[in-house]
Image (tube, rainbow, N blue to C red; front, side, top):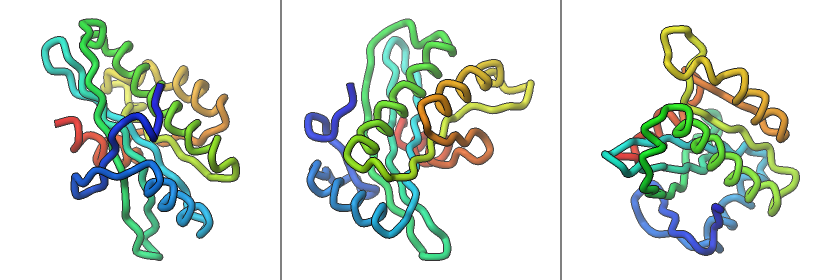
Amino acid sequence: MITFSRNIWFDADDNEITYKNILLHVTKYINDGEKVYIGVDSMLYNSTCVFAIVIAFHNRDKKIAKYFFKRIKKKSHKFKDLQCKIMEEVNLALQTAQLITRTFPTAEVELHIDIGTEKENATSKYFNFIKGWVTGTGYSLKVKPYSWASSSVADWHTK
């Protein structure tokens, strides 16, 4: 289970950030009518999978670009299976989104999942299931090439 208070989160400069400070940032952005973007990506290293979770805020017009991230290392051979790995990414994104909406029920949250819809993309076969799962929980979904919070920001922190 993802929590703010029991796990270590970082800002974009790799500085640890407290639960209280994350909440202050989230409050400010939500009160300013900004959307919260949640992205997750993963990288497999032998029998360990590193998942990076990102909470981001972005608005070009207002020149806002800020994010927080955390890494979770899970030892398991099951993540060698692409479906297991992708489903865990979605699960972690949903858990994080639920943390935000439990604290801020009016927050507009958009999940960015690093899957493609083109047939040549190995993850495209999971698109319909993931779309139904995410939208069925009340969140909006972006996938490649529009899933920047996962495919760019979270990806950077899996390495």
